[in-house]
Length: 369
Ligand SMILES: Cc1cc2nc3c(=O)[nH]c(=O)nc-3n(C[C@H](O)[C@H](O)[C@H](O)COP(=O)(O)O)c2cc1C
Image (cartoon, rainbow, N blue to C red):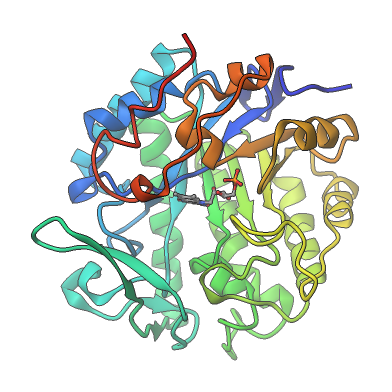
């Protein structure tokens, strides 16, 4: 029976335990460049079996929030090199989450102040986070996007692939996680509420999944499937997305991913950061996992959302999961692995320092003596 503290080989990733740090945006990378404290922050958490970085923009167009990092400029990659070096020195493993926000952006963050891009010109009823010239942070309505022309999609696939190669070859990440969750670009293409296209990228399930699969297959060709994970959130209402029939949609997606030899499939159960069950959006996660396994998928099955130790151990013991990703508990507990092992109390997270700022609420949470 697997426990949280057992090692696992997930594709090319040899993990010392089943505890994963979930991706957590912290808005502390001015100029999209990870800083020296970013390296300290991740290295402090290196006892996790795997660290997944905060979402990281694959291109300027993929940016949607102030002071989030990128993977498309030399200084950004130099910043990340410092991070991966510090984590590896501390004995950890780290993958970077590849992000294109699509419509969840603001003209002030886009190249030449243009409109953000999306499958369809439908605004998300959601907010982004901006920082003004005086350094004050605030939440603002996202800008109405323009619909991408099909002729622009190959360039987006290319940006994902270039970012993945930069991550592995230049910045020395152990792998990449494709962010296809939480209402960002790839999730916008998947779901009926945000994709009203009538071309090969809209309409049927096969068409709505096309861009995601082109991106993942391209990255796998470039860096090898064993270094690639993917994050999906079948029913989350985050960033104003909804699908009319998520069960067949996501079963199609995982069946198509099965032959690619991915390191892991990462599923957010329920509403990201909210309830694990949504009465108006039922979803069968067992059936999803079975669809992947029945199609020959060998990647580790990673789950997330509101886990505590008891639920995590239960899911591992029943075989419903191979890896458990913890978000907020890792913000406030750099030594979460040890605390879980010793059943020590957890530091509570301070929400006021989640987004933006410096060391406070970032690198100053205490570890056990
Ligand atoms: C401050 C903060 C930042 C987050 N940033 C990201 C992100 O960059 N990428 C992502 O996929 N999810 C992000 N999430 C969602 C978390 O990865 C996770 O799904 C959520 O917190 C639920 O897990 P938990 O209950 O263990 O915290 C973020 C959550 C929080 C609280």
